[in-house]
Image (cartoon, rainbow, N blue to C red; front, side):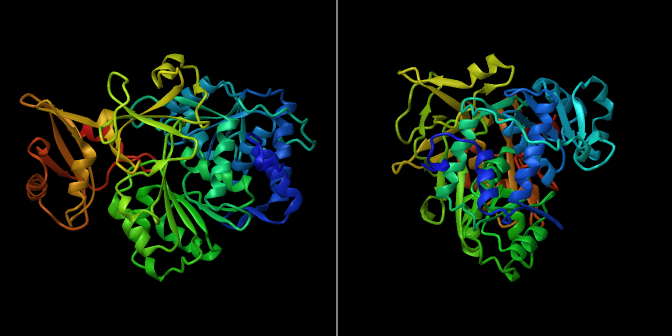
Length: 506
């Protein structure tokens, strides 16, 4: 039995196998720097040995907060070789929020760069973790000086043990540490075999390494012996240049990136014929944008719907189901998904309720937050645990899931439920509108009323847009106002921060 045929295994072991069989295969390329599998495996060994030298025990945690780099990747995967979990942390949160996450992990070591060290300066006194600098700056002990010259002591693989702690994006509140197991990450690797990942793959990664959006394809790419081309910072034209230069075959992107890439004036002049598949996840992907991607960009398109917490995942093979682009696909093999009402009863096909799911890909729980973990679960009549998504949706007659929006995004106006995504879809059908986001605001007459924020492609009057949309909306859905905005506030992986839009209306 090969490693990949096992129900559970170690990504670090897969990388070691590639180092033995294809040692000169490029593992990661970043700008003018690159490392092959032999070099990457050796660097992982030095990280693992250094953590063991420092007394870091399996099951404990380290933290990384820095711009994506080869060193970042080696520390992340080297730690897992020592059985140590990794908390990859978003550098752009406030200093106090970043410090609070580091403290919450109990990290013994913090790997950072100059930019993050400067950002953390106001909160640095509260942190006890040893600092290691990934970029050779004075942010901490230089990585080269910290690394061990020896080999690590082998650690028994624990499928149920923590692989990483991913902090939620905080789009709806305080970020929570989502503890993902080794088993969960292994399931992701095996899924990407079916997506065509192998040693001939060139995976162009342009989202940050602290994001689960990135890790769900970045880790399988290395586990399956692919070459990863890493962009430390995304720009649409630069993405196209790299795709053409390296003959990219695959790329994970969020919907806003697809839109920005397709809007590059010279898009059609780039040779993208090597692409076999693109992936989208993490945010609403409008059907019209999917259609344009299929029409203009060679290769297939897969949308993966799911949560960092795991549970149920849906997969839409968009190139095979062009009549289902308004959906997020069907549940993945081995994934069980239901739609439930507010009383926890499973709803029949066609009815809208909260989406819940279970699978082998489920978080262990929220770190140091048992009450939040319990609140995230729903149990069926057999006592099996499912994870609540917080999304509202329904299954159509063919078993495809249609998402109506976030449960917290329901606008209750005059006693009627209004789904923001329905209004946003109508607005985006106007030729002058590039993007739209709808939020509910308090109304003395209706309880709540919907207000739209739009980004324009060409000049249009807000009142005219409101009138145009309201002609196409139901009586209970009508917008009370439209505001033009230069750009929608987003987190680094493209999710719209609706709480910031609501703040603008206070």
